[in-house]
Image (cartoon, rainbow, N blue to C red; front, top):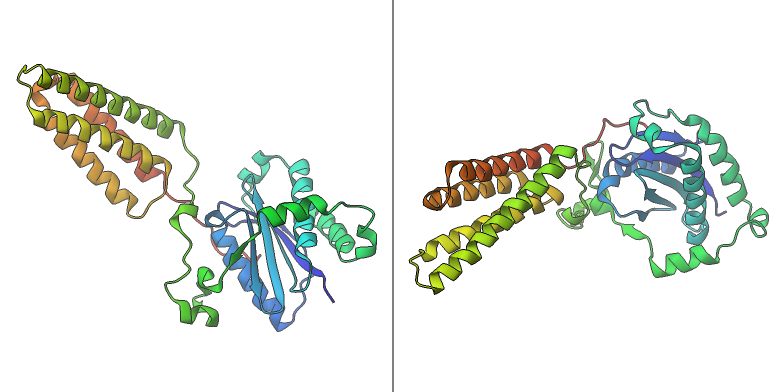
Length: 307
């Protein structure tokens, strides 16, 4: 019999469970699925906003929006369009009932457990197809799923559960890792935004001086060609700092340190063309942006909550 078995509401940034249905069965398969719920909750920030994980006779589906993820467990023969329509209803009701300030500042697991009442009522409706036929229109959801199918999560991407490697992932070790393109950084702070603007300003100043140096060289005023290289390298370093500040990449902190070193070297070479205040400004901005890159790390995860 196809049906929805359970559902949870989880905060994306740290995997904190905000609410969950309280009627888990105690079968071996269901207990295994609880492990997958916990594993997925740790990786929500790295995954697309609509996903499906197939686990034997069960499917785990979830959608994420505005920093909150809505996850459900159903049998493998439950229709996709009904599953994601169910999650969409949970999302709309949760957003209407609770504001983002409450969800962002929540510190206790299951602090919105009263939302389980709505989960239970909605689950009963979706487990009774006769009551659904006249109450919802599935055509829009069906079209959306066809145009943008849910991302299929592989067992390789989950890694291990409670330190024990999954049997599904042994043969694909090192494969199917979640791309760093999906990795999210912590929300930008005011100081980070200021650093981004100042780094752009330094890059623009270097670019302008570089073009002026080219003009001087063409007019045979004696400017060294190496100065032009130094100005353009300084521009590239500033722009790359902006990139590191906004996007996640491997060895990000090391790259930021090396980029700052390049900024210092360029300004040392341009010592004769800049006064002390200009040198101080460029080096200080470079150091400030490097600090902001180090402070704005990938979103971390909270301890394992029983989801």
